[in-house]
Length: 196
Image (tube, rainbow, N blue to C red; front, side, top):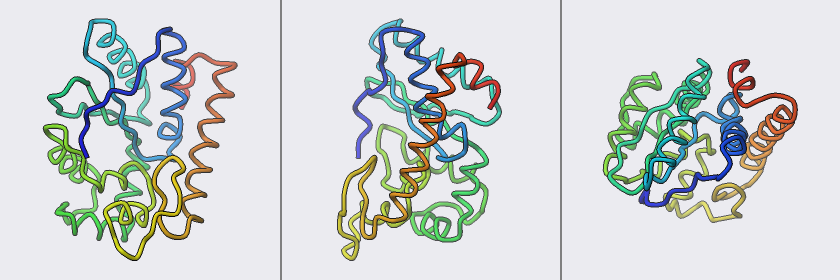
């Protein structure tokens, strides 16, 4: 898979920040371990928006971000919840799977994140990134072409085999986004991020 598209753009600065707080709400709340954001780097305005989003989420220790080395048309960053990522990586099934993909034998998420970012240099996205993004292992393995797992449906991501676990995960993510959406009716993006 190639990182060759920029997805994140909105004209109004206030709406722009609200949209990102809503999008990253599941990560901020620990429901989802990580999310990748892409920003066009075609002009100074886009760069300023990218920096504004990174600055906003620097105001909490519930979320960190790292720039993704990419030589394309977009700036990309991986925003992650350290606790949720640690829990995801340390799950024995995920850990075994990642080790089978060449990841370190250690249980700490930092070494796994470093390995993932090194694999992403130049714009390639390894299929196992789904683990880091919080997708169920069966869906990641199905996406990689495991013959026993057939595509069941697409709902936020490609779901393979029995959809029960995937549907529950998707409901948790959507519920977290809805909670943030409600908070945005009463609070500024900065207030939500700072109080997380």
